[in-house]
Every structure is written in C-alpha cells, then in structure tokens.
Image (cartoon, rainbow, N blue to C red; front, top):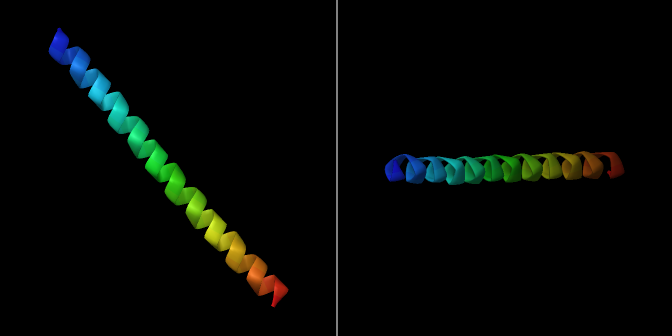
Amino acid sequence: MVELFVLGCTGIVVFLHGTRFIFHALTQHLAVRSLSFLGFVGW
C-alpha cells in the first residue's frame, strides 16, 4: 500500500515537472519567434 502511494506521488511529481518543462520550452520558443517576427517587421 505504501509502495503504491510513493509510486503515485513520484508519478505526479514527474508529471508536473514534465509539463512545467514543456510549458517553459513552448513559451521560450514562442517568445523567440515573436521577437524575431517583431525584429523582421521593424527592420
């Protein structure tokens, strides 16, 4: 029972960590794209 609880908590932590990493990568990618787009328009 305790093993399942620990396994579940670990899974949740890993899942949250993964979504945070993906979200961070996506926002950084979008920020770079919008910045390059603005630079292109301004140029």
